[in-house]
Length: 206
Image (cartoon, rainbow, N blue to C red; front, side):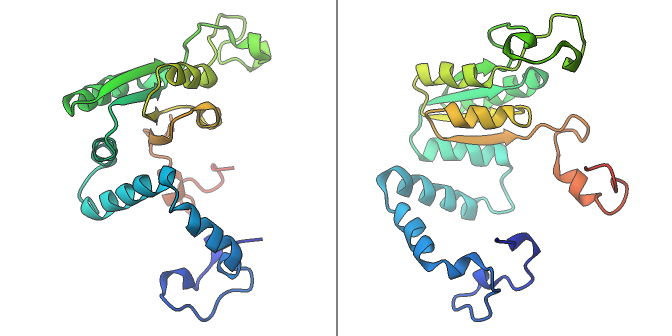
């Protein structure tokens, strides 16, 4: 079992590592070689190189919004899919405008598309936010299928719920990046709970 999050050696950051932990993934040389080969595939090479170039050019200078726009432009994408949460409609509108000003076409689909009550997919009435009322389900699979039908070049997830985003990634034909990770409590900054994990948020994260 790999435990990189607990590693104090960080041998992966040196050109000629010596003291590898016993469970270091880098001991899996065959797997590492197989992974490296995949970066040479036409479907991966340009995308990975471009993303890495953007990392270097905008390092500690560009916000994620600009990095995302530049990735789309430098990859030569034209039609961008935006799957967003209804609760972040304002953010979706602002970001769509930014993409359009950059010369990109935007196809956006809201999470509640379909207008189907949550009970239709097996969610018990008592597990609704407002039981015994019409409550439209989040529909990440439909969001993905609708964007697939539009043949988007690249998709962006904006504020989809935990787990709902996973289904969107699963069914999206195009590659996906996430612009905003939803966190209703921390102004969509989930890392805040980690920074406070040993202090104000002790005991609140599990």
